[in-house]
Figure (cartoon, rainbow, N blue to C red):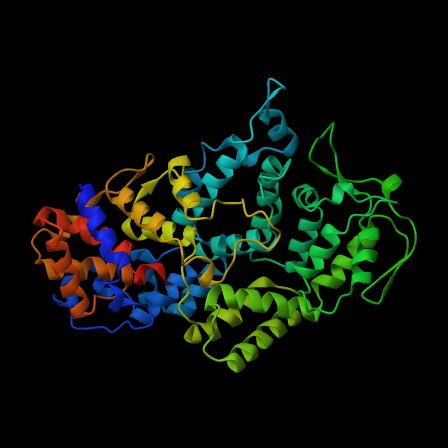
Length: 503
């Protein structure tokens, strides 16, 4: 177990950048390891550092078996496997979700369960189980690219559980909107989202009715969900689409929380959106616009840019090459009539070579630590609190744009990450267990430098640069580390290092 003194000494060391700054992802100078790679167990057979970095983007942290799979079949073939998630057996992950019984309930049942004793509203259990499920899936699912896309669409079609009835409606949205379509057809996803009570409630469309229009959802479906802010729509288009959306609302009594169109609340006049004449057909008016938005060239380009930023980084090496890539991805999207996998295939197969280091968002940081170290977790509240302390509680971003993708948004809050690393290694997170004894078993007879190499290969994908390794070990010795303390201290140090913060 690490002492408080050792942790504080290590934190001060990391804060000053003295120990591991040479391992910055912008440097990554590889040196001869202290022990031959062939003696470092199965990790010796893992892919090159370049493949490791690719897997760091295509998973929530590459586990040894995923690294070995890429070694066996190659990265392009592995990506194709991931683009067909239904063919990947995910039963072990699904079994971990069995106790979370709210995940399968309908909106009215979730509402009834939340209205305990009618006057004691429980707003914690339902979103709590949804957050727990999100983390479990990100850590344990074999369908890693699919879960990354679920995470992406959850931001793209952001809904905060902290607003009104969204605390129970979002569970249905996650099950019926995001997850079924995450690697399917974007038109189907947009259609499902537009009919989602959670989305309608979050963006106030239940208050949009004839004579009292509310433009919130009409604006966001064009600005954020489809065309993009520079996609060619006007304020007049927003106003006209809001008129089309009048009467799209939510049942609030029997079958509470289900979508309903109420003709009595609908503006019956003709409308004109994006140059299209919309004849008075009631509910069909919006559905006509949705179909046009889903196949619009601006939508294709907007999605290609966002997915490129998510997977390749927010600072591409070449503006011209990135523009060419996004144009090709957008064309693949249009040619395939909106297939998400077709767009993604171009970005991943053709773009990973030009990807830039991206600072891990909090959920990626936590999940990568758990996955790479083989930790066992139930994803419950104690672990969720660590995630919240880093600024990314699942489904709680208050504005419709979703949690930010930019590295700069996450780089200024490092102390909670160090606290998590310390708590994980020290067994201080209830419901989460790291078997450090088993992890350290291969290290027992190794010299300190070889121990550092083994753990670095596991967590960073490459052995430490020689000078960096020497400085780290000297610093740990100055902190009073004994031989038995070394695996724990090295693990905390590597999890807290600059290199582990990036993907």
